[in-house]
Length: 202
Image 1: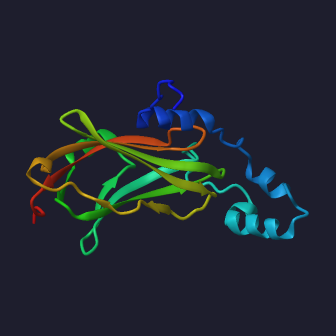
Image 2: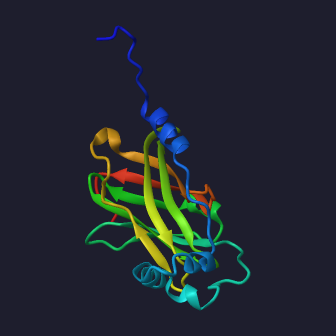
Image 3: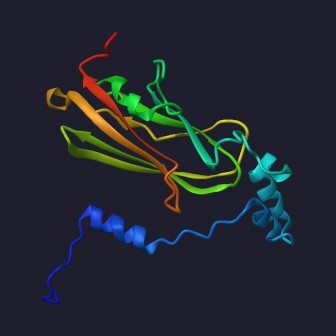
């Protein structure tokens, strides 16, 4: 033993260290991506397959919307049941009035439906912070990935999560959701609610 005091870090400090040490690659246009490494035939074909219809010109789904990423919907998915959905294209303050009821202990996934237009987006991330009575009880960050522009809706589904269970876990929860990327662009941020019950409301 060296006799020196051991330095420990909280998970929050470790996360900040990771964030501070990671430097995202510079943004590139679709034209720049296609022009690079032309001599590498396999890489060229890979990029063409990845970019798809974006090679034919700028993909614009909504000319009146300057955003690269348009987040359309959040769905809470439980096997054997209809998805519970939130429309993210309207007034986001109305989402607080729509409370999902979830049976305790069930396994669920969250699906985000979105459109990418104009340019490729790098390192999309979905961050979700859950609160109960104003106190943070859970945080999860999912790496969604990089996506080219497409006219079709694209989706990301989280790995399965288990809902809390037990008498003490039942009650109302508030969730802050953020769809961002490596360059810290906030594509959408919204708040929604769910309630853990002993059984489904129906």
